[in-house]
Amino acid sequence: MPDSPVVTLRARSDSDADVLFSLAADLTTWEERGPDFPAPLTRAAYDARLAAESETAGPSIRFVIEVDGAPVGSAGLFNVDHLARHAEVGIALVADARGRGIGTTALSQIVDFAFVRCNLRRVHLEVISSNVGAVRAYEKAGFVVEGRLREHAWVRGHYEDIILMGLLRS
Image (cartoon, rainbow, N blue to C red; front, side, top):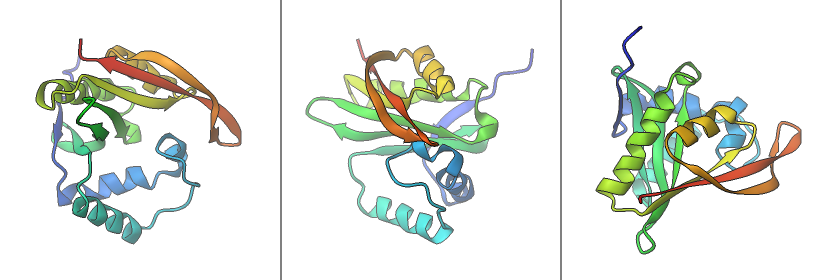
């Protein structure tokens, strides 16, 4: 059996820009990242967005997912509520890294970071119901289905449900 890949979370560096841009510009998965219309993303627009993020360091924590020394995705905690002690978690992987357990490992690491280092009590996420690979990875990491927003997302010509999932520190 081959060795399992070494998955780590680390700070973003300038050398990660190409991989992170490829994730942000991937029109095949745009529905999984937000409510905006699908549109090509230029490198200049992406670079401007990164610069704006670093200027407004809002309530989020972002990591690069690295496998055996190479960047393969990103993970983050968003909309951190310091009073109620919860945050939304998100993860994105390049196509070659999907289906290999990398997402499950990275998700477990960011959840551990959220609970142990940030003292959060709860993390939650939203996922399109047809993204069964992601749902499976979230369940492996301990997330449970907490609800469903019926026909809430417009995905490639039809409406799909959004599944709400959460995980409590306890």
